[in-house]
Every structure is written in C-alpha cells, then in structure tokens.
Image (cartoon, rainbow, N blue to C red; front, side):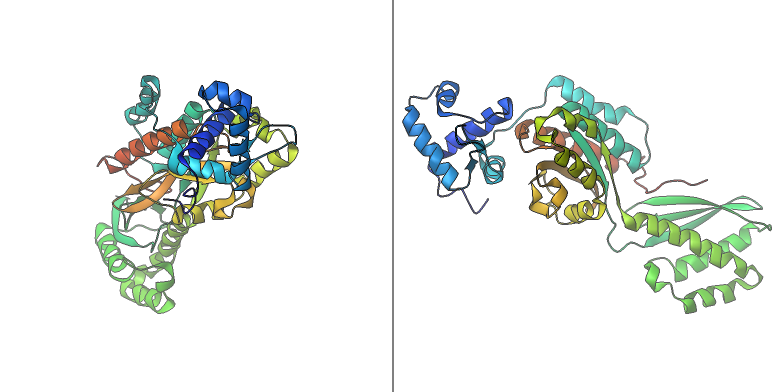
Length: 357
C-alpha cells in the first residue's frame, strides 16, 4: 500500500477517481460542472470546486491554465493505480488474440517476446517493448559436444536456469569422437560452473596441456564460449509500434518526440528497472519513478517473466500518463502469463541468443 492517500476522505478519493477516468477518456482538463453530470452527483458545483482545490493543494491534481479545470498529477495517477482503479476482464477477441501466441511453433525467447510485444501494442494501441534480462551469476552448467563430421562439431552449452545455446565449430583438421569426448570432459571439469573471470590463464594452460597435440582446440573453443556468455550477460530491449504514440497529443511536442528517441537508447536503465521490479505482478511506472529521465512524461506497464524462479525478461507497454490503466494492466498480465506458460513447456528452449550455424 502507498504511504499517501490516507489523508483523503472517501468523497475525495471517489472524486479523484472520477477526474482521472474522465481525463483518460477526454484528454482535457475536468471542470466541476462536467463532473457533476458525469458522476450524476447531488453535490453542488461549489462543493466539488472546493474539494478539487484541496486535492490540488495536496498534490493530487494540477491546473494547467488559470481558467481551466484540473487534470490528475503524477501523484494522483499513482494513487489511482495503487488503490482506486477497478479490475478489467479482457474481451473474447482480446483473449483470442493473446492465445494465438500459443499456437505458433517457436523455440527462441526472442521471437516469443517480439510477437508478444506486437500483440500488446495492437491491443492497447500504445507502443510496446520487451526486455531480455541480464542473467544473474551467469555460467555454463554443462557442455555437450556432438560430432557432425570429421571437420565440424556442435558445441551445446546448457546455462544455469535452463538456457541452451548451440554453436557450430568448424576445423581445418580432422578429429574423431575420442578426441571430442576428452575435450568435453575437460570443459565440464575446468569451465562448467564458472563465470568468465574465473577462467584464468593457468586454467587455460592446464587444459591445453591435457589435450596434447590437440591443444590448438582450446583457445578458439573458449572464444566461442566467451562470446555466448557476453551475449547473454548484456541483456537487451526492443520496441514495437513507437509510431502509435504520435497519435496522442501528449507526444505532439518536438521535445516529447525527442524524449522517445532518447528512451530507445536507455537500455541499461531499462535493465536496471527490471532487476528492481516486483517479479510477482504487473508493474506500473508513472513518470521517472525509475530515474529514467526520458520517460518523465510517460507511463510504463510491464510484466516480468519468470521461469524456474529466474526472471528472463519482461513484456510491457509505453503510453502517456493518460492511459486506461485498468485495461492495460489486465492485458499486460494476460500476455505475460501466457508467455510464462510457453516458457514452462518442455518443448520450448528459452535460449539466448539461439543457434549459430
């Protein structure tokens, strides 16, 4: 529960709720006369004006122009999301669109997240994004080497948490299955379970010594392993449907448009946001709650995706403060839970970045 809002009477809370919902629908400052009609309230216009003035003095409303009505502030939207909004049940067509994710034959997390974010953008009519998280304590749990012919073998790396990355290794000289078994044994003995910084020069020298005349295999193989680990450690973020935001007056200003482009370059900040998020529910970020300056005038709604207790990423929506949070939160949760179910399926490989030929 938030540490604010307790000072408000029930009447003030219901009034704030009505102002937020009217402003979401109309996109204009809300006046007392319109509010009386919309709420079908028996309160007088003067009483509502007084209540609105108090809500403004407490920081829940703002008055953009001296002669205009009020609009919700960031604090007002925050209280609405945390305490006042109702639930939303996705429609049959919305559920059908989300369920279409399950009918696609996909093996890679990247592709699933991309399609999920596209669906989120279409259903909410806002921009969407997906994040691939930085793995925590990244290391290869097990190495498997599969000989495909005398000059090529597959390096199969199973990471802690279940990710599987496969790389094809080409050679300029022939090897047999006996050499490959010895190489796999060394990798699992000296490299499995260790982070990159733990694979030191003495470890490499030891492995080369034990491989004898085939010691030339060690360095290129470790480079492939390092490359896969670096790809996984970096994390990533991708955006879908950013042009949809240009429909909204909040993003008509050139400064706001520039902030959208700045936001697309804020990869590290988004990854930090995911790592500090509540992984058990849909998260709602209003303005720069995260310290990301480029989203100061935007709101983010996202669902962290887990598999086996590990956060693999997130799917979310970007829009103005003035978005229908009830609907967007419900859809983000529905999409997120669908993706999590797909990640839990045995036939799915949540590997990043995937196969390389």
